[in-house]
Structure formats: structure tokens, C-alpha cells
Length: 266
Image (cartoon, rainbow, N blue to C red; front, side, top):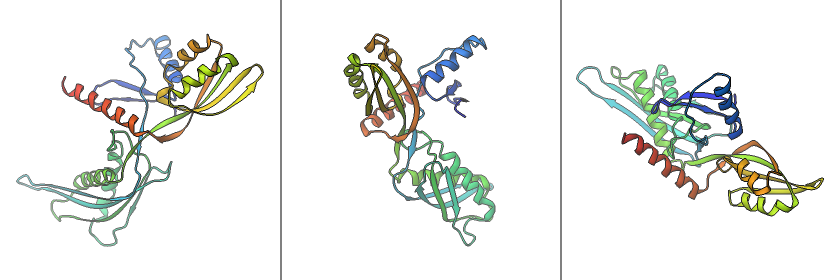
């Protein structure tokens, strides 16, 4: 479950996902050495997520008329932040026939697809609770596709009103370092948004425990080797997701927008 592969629909590039820089380096080495894959490898990227801060109401109305049979779907949704790890919790609260039962699953499918691209920077929203509370349909023009699109539109409308925010993965870091390099190592961690949680003595070395954003760990092995003349060791493992500071979020969004503009100009 820690290794995933997908193809980017915009660039046709193959994207592999792992637990960190070292994990990806091992996977890439195996691709080159064992499977003889000739590939140009880009820099690793962080798998951010998005969250919702408050509940809101969302409206999705999809209407198309094109001479013959049209398309009509309309939903009213209540959108709530979800509990971590619950995914999409969907509840049909309509007692009457405002949205016929045969279209309810299509609404849910539309919401599920819309969750893959959040309003902040296009990263997925994984945990959300949705209540379908109202809507309307047309005897002739309504269809599953129309209600699927309406569900997607309603979720996007509600999510944008829910004070969305960006989340990044935090890593638990342990560094074992000789005493004489302690100050330099801590200074480096502080300059990379790390939260130093504690220090203990182990034999003739100091053990630093900290939480650090995954984005700040790229290249850490090289930095640590340079700071300590190769006499320190470290270990990293995933801890949890947390909200990205506003200044960092703005940089991430600006980078993504610049990338999209560059792709559009090709």
C-alpha cells in the first residue's frame, strides 16, 4: 500500500509514489538495475492533501438544452469536515422525491470524483461528510450523468465555502550525532521548519527527536553528512498530516499555477 503508480493525464508521465526520498531512491535503483528501465527521473514531489475547516451549503445545478432531449440535474448539499480516516460519508436526507432514488448513487459518484481535486491547489480532499438535503428533477431531461455532474458541482461549491486549507505530511525524525556537531544540526533543523521535541544522551552521542515537514527532508542525508563530516546517522518515518503555514501555502499555490501556465503555453 506504500507504493503506487499512475499516469499523469496532462503530461503522460508515469508517477510513482512512496513513503519518502529514500524509498523512492530504492525503487528507482531497482527499475534501472533489475528491470533495465531507461527513464528520466524528475525531482520528488510532496503528496499534499486538502481539508475543510467549517461546514457549508453547496448547490449544484446542471441544465443543458440542445434542440432534442436536454440534461437536467439539481442538488442541494450540506458539506461538513470529516473525521480523519473516514473518507466520504454520504447521507441521503431526502424523504420525498425531490431527487429520485435511481439518481442518488450518481450524485455520490460525482462528489467522489470532485474530491480528487480540492479548491486550494487541486490536491485531494479525503475526509468529508455530505448530506443530500434537496434538489429537483425533470421527467424527460434528467439522467444519471446530469445528476453526477450536479453532485460534482454542488460539492465544489460547498467545499469552496468551507474555508479549505492545505495539509502536508509530517515526519518523525531521529538524529544520532556527536556532541561537537549538535549545535549545527539543531540550527539546520530550525531553519527547515522542524520542531525539535527532545534530546537524550546515548553513549558518547546526542539523540535528537523532531517533527519535520516531508518537503524539508529532501536532500537531508547530504546536508547532515556535510554538517557532521559523515559522523551522524538519522531515521525518518511518517507521523501525520498537519496544516501548511499560510506563507508556505501561498508559495505552493504559486508554483502550481506557474506549472499549469507553462503547460498551457506549450
